[in-house]
Picture 1 (tube, rainbow, N blue to C red):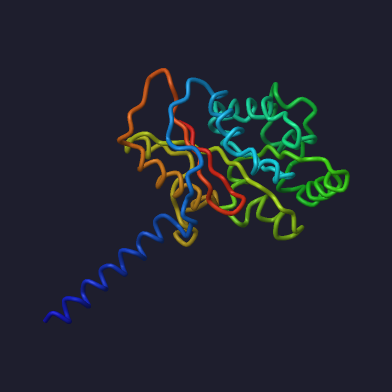
Picture 2: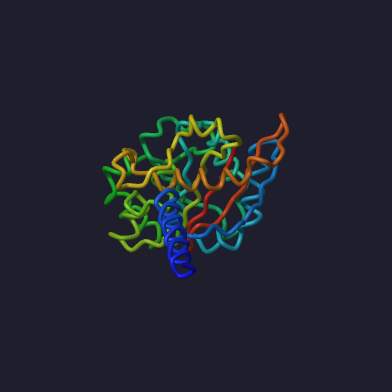
Length: 241
């Protein structure tokens, strides 16, 4: 009887593990870089990112910085980052933006625009030319293009097809309650469900998993919550309320 009970328990634990993997996806265990904090304005979060990851930035001559186009408030974090990231060995000499993002506004003057998915080879050649001239490149794109949790996206293809070494910073929404899960922009789907029409389900699962760990943390009406973690060797997620 005891042996049978042990087999049943083992089977239950195995099924629970499989279910958890399917639900949240096969994502690397996150490494905290900026713990859950409250920020008065986007500049403060941008400053925290630039200060906390200076060494990583020095070693990132090609940076893909993504945000969710459906969340235009995230763009201000990126704009502020570009303004303050001006130190020796940190500033990016070339900025390339995905043309489908439209008018990015102030903070990206002189940015070159490409339809990154359709002009992938042109983008790669431009990056390679900049590298040959020892110029640092910043790519501005949707987070679904930049996150390395999605190996088939723009950054994934640049790495696989053109052997480019790219660091990714991707801003994603930080949910603050169970109710907000109903309107999440990137749903948590795994590819084999057939529901992941955006092809970004693994990123959605990362948003859901990390957000749920913060639901009990207190906020303030005048401040926005934010945090940052590392998901791979050169892959970082920035969560912003």
